[in-house]
Image (cartoon, rainbow, N blue to C red; front, side):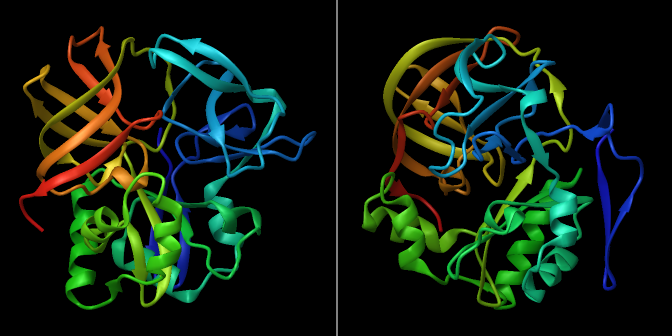
Length: 300
């Protein structure tokens, strides 16, 4: 069962039963984990995990050691870092959202969006924010397209717009040239500012964990040039169809915010090519040492 929140002008009220394993809520994509021994923080990646471990990536540069170990996992078709569940503490996003001292604009934004579930992650969730930190939010709705439409309406009303452009570019300069960043970033609604307050929003595909049951085979890294069309570019993970002369049509999938909301056009993409053994489809993942570079944008 997923977790659900009702938003009112009086604040947030958790409704329904909260999913638990024993006495702990079950982490999924975007949750922070803390290793009490090393003090390192990790970010849970994805919705499918082994029963006794969680797939993670380091949070900032703090996770330099600690309990994470590399492990090959058939459900993602590659080696990834995992941590034993009993060695880390999960930072519950709902509790973090309730207890953090956030700008009032953040609660107003959530009220206007009205997701079924919302939580806080990132620096504000562990009280490590700085003067230029984004507020990192996780949201879920069974009608995710309505959340994104609400963001479009807020931009049309002049409530969402760019700010801290130079700070944001510094975070993405390893992926984009400045000209590419300036081409793409003004279109962003998930990584923007509401009434001048910077936020990063991840619209989740699920608000619960699933068994590690998918089966992928990695076929190696490829570089493709082709036309890109968004399927659900605003969700986590974002999904597109890339049509190229090299391998035909493949699904481009990315968990990184910088590769969300890409407009239709021609792109040069490097990533890990994988085959879904259950469905037979091909997937291209640029997140692991790859890139997505715009060549021609068809629409803005």
